[in-house]
Amino acid sequence: MIFSAGFFIFAYNQRFKADAVICLFLRALEIDYVLVVLFCVFFRPKIITVYYNGICRRPEDFAMYALLIFALFVWKIYGLIDNDASYLQWIGYGMGAASALYFVLRSGGVVAKIALILVAITYLYGCVYIWVKKRVSFRYRWKQILTAIVFSFLCVVVIHISVKYLPDILQTTVVFEDEQLVSVLPEDELQLYQQMFPITLENVTSKDTINVMGSWKNYARMMGLYGNATQIYRNREPVQAYNGYLDLMYHYGIFAVIPFVLYQIYGFCISLKKCRRFFGKKNPYIFVLCVNIIFTVFCVFGNASVNFGNIAVWCYFLFNGVYFKE
Figure (cartoon, helix red, strand yellow):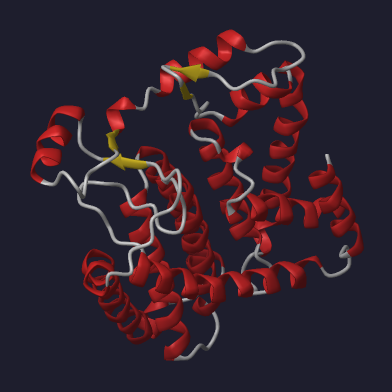
């Protein structure tokens, strides 16, 4: 309640300059992402067969953050299409989008790929809209686009090699407490790898051990009208819901999900309404729509609704809160 009320007050105070607030916030995200990449390169190695956790304790959280950054830099590239932009801008935003895409593919499973496809479709529709409605030709910018692609490829290669070898060479590896290491391999193949790399793959679990449907059944069976303060356990281990709506109904009651769903519907409606004006850099409405898509996908198949430590969740409530004045 305090969290929601804080954003309502913030939105009211900034009701006459909502676009400027969001653009400044996104500029801060760009600067922060540079520090994130440097931290990953020097301190967070990629473990063989394991989803990449990056700056987070779980791969799901880092995938959601990387998707947010990918959508941000692609939106920045949109601002360059119908404007005269320098090669440096094309290269910088291209490298940012490519590196974020690399992190998404390295850290995300099926859920992250679903969100990535939906975000890509959204931007592809906007690209066609620019091409048809505004009659902007991309052939006059092929040099900038080609240069950005080359530098983006080189950037991804450098990051890939660095996160694979550099922390081990410098002996600067950082391990988080209660970190969840999930392998992309099934259980039987993971056991073979653990025999070959016993130290590296210690405490690594297979993705097959994550029983999403079983978690859904446990939460659906034990939810009540008034909610529960206790955590669900299975084999003396806490069970995650892997569904934000089920988690909300279990902890706060069945009817608690109604205002949450209505808020999500509002977010989609206001962002879709404004998407026709996304061309200018002062109008990041298509990006706000992508943030709504990312958050909703991870709510359905993940734990986004209860993960307030992730900047993507903060962006979701911030952007919709700023536009609440509409």
